[in-house]
Each structure stands twice: as structure tokens, then as C-alpha cells.
Length: 235
Length: 221
Image (cartoon, rainbow over all chains, first blue to last red; front, side, top):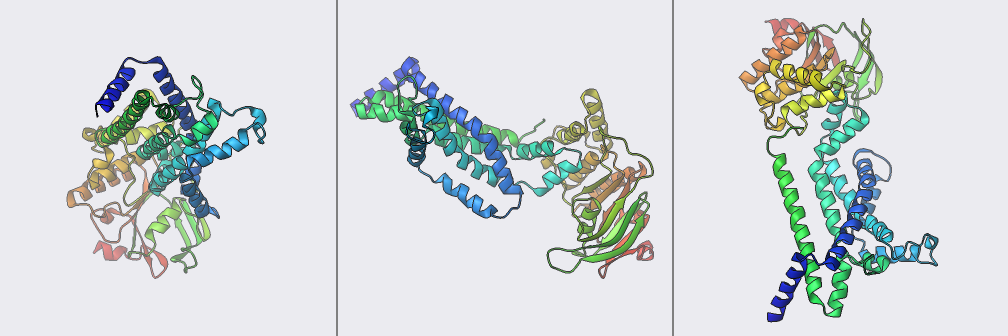
């Protein structure tokens, strides 16, 4: 118990003293995951819109496929990307393996199904009258689409937060295609795994606290936005 | 002017709800469209607004004078749902959307929105969430939004259904004002009310046909 308390104290000290090595790892994690979310969001939104609003043959199969991809383990994504990006693989010439770009690609693949499934469910729940009303009142196609997204904004934010939470906390693909290289591809989760194996619990715990704090901040932000949505608003 | 010929519509493989061999309407009057529940009043209004494509026949709107080109291009024929959809923003925000979509900016947009809120008795609610309004206020906001566009024809689907007496009076007054401002109106209602008694024409969907002025005498009594 005494040792645990000491480790926790040391972890807090590392965080509050802005230990450069620790904050560098946090910076890499955020940069990779935020980039992945920003890249994944527009196509996920378009696919979700297509699935929610356009009737086409095989639509229900496509929805089932998206839901299935949500359950794909991160190590499987890591394995497939590793085979594609390794030197002998079909995309080996791009020399992406063990780079932040490769990690971003992995996280895009992990974020897409979560984003698409949640956005699909949100957009499907929007009243058909919203589109009709906007179009009748003079909105163009893109303006109507924007209104639809705005009407679903809390669902969109929830989808982004859920996807961000999934990819920043994943370790499988990050370690397989990132390689956990110090000062380059070491992220919060890969560092926790490494430090634990080395018996350096303080840094691992400090990074774990960052992840917990991040989850808390994201949930509070969502709560605040939902609260604001129920009070007087203006655009 | 509206010209309808050989119009028939139904859903799926079911037989047509009704058939309208020919209908001509000058598009200046206040029309009460009556029919029992399920007789196809909403479907007819949606077809006239172009929100649905008829199974058979044609619907043609023609205007005596040239309409202004966009922007701004006011909606000519507007359909209002029985429960109007209000965007999840403030009352004024709902009107500002319309202003923005139709290319009005700055003081022009602000003045038009403010004037419309005043005209429809919603100025005191300008910053209130639109979805927190009462049923009557919601319908007034939907009418205000439509009025901003100065439509030629307004198709209202049961505009006073499930409203209390005061709200019916307020909405009826607003609809009459819109009509006096030059907007032709077709409103559906399956019962007579203060509003329907002000109508100039009566259309009735009965026995799968549209009868024009068939029950005018009955209503007048």
C-alpha cells in the first residue's frame, strides 16, 4: 500500500512538474488521434448520411457491415496494416511502417466504423420534415445538409467523443504499426505497456491518469453542451 | 393559376386514394379542403406543393406575371405540416435561417425578421427556444417563417387541429392577414371552424373524388 502511495505521488509530481518526456508522449498521442478523427469525420458523415437517407439495394447489408467493423479488435487492424505496409507488402514502397502516418491510418480505420454507426443512428433519427422544411424555405442542398447536421449536433459530438475515446486508448495497432519508438511514435498507451513491463510504474500511472482525466473532460464537455442546448439559444 | 388533370395517387400497390379528372383554380382565394380522416387531404396538399410525385396525371402552376429571379427567390407554393417542424434554435433564429437562405444580409435581414416577429405577435419570444413554444405559437412561428418569403400560395395541413380556442383565434387572424396580403391559401380541416367559415371556396374529398363547392351551402347554414 505504501509503495502504491509513493508511486501515485511520483506520478502526480511527473505530471505537475511538466516532465518533458511525459508531455512529449501525451503530445504525440493527441496529435495522432486528433488528426485521425479530423480525417475520418467527413467521409464517415457522408457514408452515414447515405445509409440514413438514401434507399439503395444492399443498404441493410452495408449497415450490418459497418456495425461488424466496430467489433474488429485493434490488433487485427494492426496486423492487416503491418502486412500491407511492411517492406515485402504491397504498400511497402511507401515506407510508412513505424511512422506517425501509419498510426494515423490505423486509427482512421478504427474510428470510421464507430463514427459511421453512431452518425447513422443520429441522422436516421432526424425528422424527415427538417429536410422538407429547409428545402421549401429556400435552403440549397448543401444548406439543408448543414441544417440537418446542426439539428443532430449533440449526436455528432457524442460520436466524435466516442471515436476519439476509442482510438486514443487503443494499444494494439499503435504498437504494431507505430513500433513504440521513443520521441517519435510512443503514445500514452504504448508507453504505459512498456513502462509497466520495465517495472517503472510511476510514469505508467501518470499517463493512465491523463487518460482518465481526458475521459472526464470529454464527458463534462458533452454534458455542458447538452445543458446549453436546453436553455435559451441564438444562432 | 393551378391546373390539375387526370390526377391519381396512392401508396404501393393499393388502389388510388382518389382521382381528380380536372381542376382549375385561379389561386387568389381562401379554400377549405374538407374530407374524413384518411381521405387523402395531406397527400393532395403535398402533391400540390411538389413534395411528392403523382402516380398519374399532371399538376401545373402558372403565374400571370414574371416572378423575380433569385436571389431572393420567394417560395411560390409552400406546404406547412400539421405539426410544423421548428429548427432547434431560438424563435428569431428560425426566421434568420430563412433570411440567410434567401440572401438577405445585415440590416435588411435584421429589419425583416424583427418586423415579422412583431407582425405575428412573437417579438416577446424572440430569444426563446422555438421548441418551448405552445402549439398556437409554434404555428404562428411557422406562418411567420413562410410569410417572410411572401409565398403566392400557402397549403396548410390542419393548421388549427388540437389548438385551444384562443390559439385558434390567433392563428385564424394571422391566416386571414396573410390572405389579405395577397397570399392564396388552401387549408385542410375535417371540421368547420371560425377559420373555415371565412373561406371563399370549398373543396371536398369524398367517395374518392374531389368535389368543388359541394358543401358550401351546408357550411353556410
